[in-house]
Image (cartoon, rainbow, N blue to C red; front, top):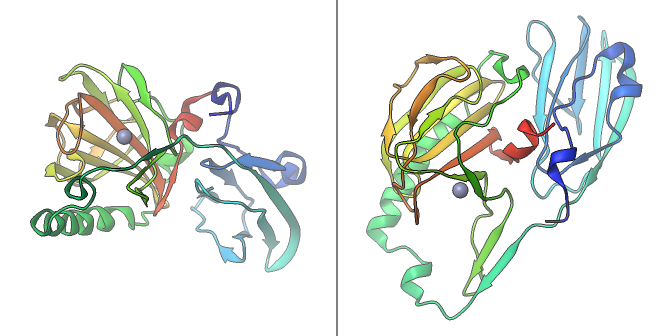
Length: 266
Ligand SMILES: [Zn+2]
């Protein structure tokens, strides 16, 4: 990857008074943008109204493949206050092409496909929730101790079929290593056995922002449980489709995944 992620801080806070100065002119693909407006103001992203909290917080994600520019309009009592453009800095992702694999390894059989479809329904339900909480405005923490073994955005192309890009960060750690909540939130999914992700937890941080923890050997929370940032939620494992013990940690805004590394780097 071309970018040195450590030097880029991507949660960008800005307020109306200094909006035009502080609003970034550029941002990276895979970033999460958080801001706060004054009372009475509204904001649109490419013409779509963004949800505002009671205290006027908003959030949106910049997708892995977003090319931009993003058009941000701020309104005061329905009158246009400012128009801003955010240019997108594109990234180079690691693409691996593997050909000549037996077809069975590339396309799941019917029985497995049924399980995958059922799992996806459960995951989608949690992903599409739009809760009013604003837990996302706190800084995120890295949810386990270990070594980064897979980065956001990488992709494998098996027998010419592009697989889904890697939608999170892999942290290799011994089985049983404790996993902590990356931020405050509500548990909206706690499953022991999903086909791809095995033991899986989703925490909802509000306004469509959630974090997902996969391949867990233990899921130590229940659905609807209120959770605090840094609280233990489960244990590292290698359940689901996994080649060794690691935590897959993802962060998304509805269906758009962002790069967790950008949330914790500073
Ligand atoms: Zn992963």
